[in-house]
Amino acid sequence: MPKIEADTATGVESFDALENRKLVLAIKDAGIDILHRCGGNAKCTTCRVEIIEGDVEPMQELERERLAREDKLEPNTRLSCQIRVHNDLHIKVLRQASVTGLEPGTVPAE
Image (cartoon, rainbow, N blue to C red; front, side):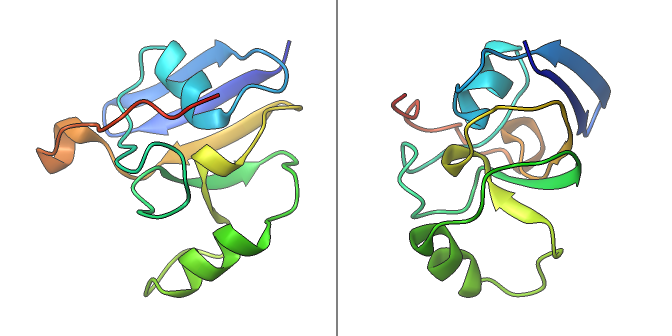
């Protein structure tokens, strides 16, 4: 089972993730606050994470096009709704409901 280390606004949390689970859902399963406003469709970018360490699948065109419309993103910024967990990862959760004051949104489909 892959191990995830997540840097959040309140500290670092470590958890096990189910193989092939969407990263955004694995983060939610661990009880970590993360925005996900569009339901996992790569439309809103609220579920952004920074990949600090570990291998993730290559970015697909939909994600690449959506992130290209944003300014000043770190080079390793990805949408957690577009990543399936296959390996150990160290990530930083970039948008949290508790910090932004926004409701998390519709739970992304598996």
